[in-house]
Length: 152
Image (cartoon, rainbow, N blue to C red; front, side, top):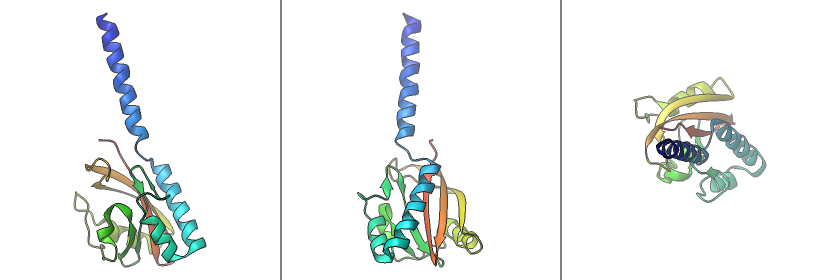
């Protein structure tokens, strides 16, 4: 009986860990969300795209995944969970470890069409600082990004 209880507890723990993982987006899903956002932008223009991206209940927010957009100077156009950032230049913003995340995106995308980046940022669902793996792609002067949070 003791072994059965331990086994059931282990199975329950594994199932809850797997359920938690299902509640989080993956890097592949973040990549696909950016590709979808860029296609939407190219088909519908800036105004419609920023409205869609900033809608917390829209097609570009999925669990802890969301698309954020800034220009090649660091001025934000979209970031659904932190709309107070819109219109602000965040090129000097740092992650929890002091890394200049937006400036790095600007610098890399000056000579490349896309990039992957890792940094520590607040997960909008858990409200915890977590490692985030972010994919960014540029379209004109705009840089579209989305990232997945690693489980803590």
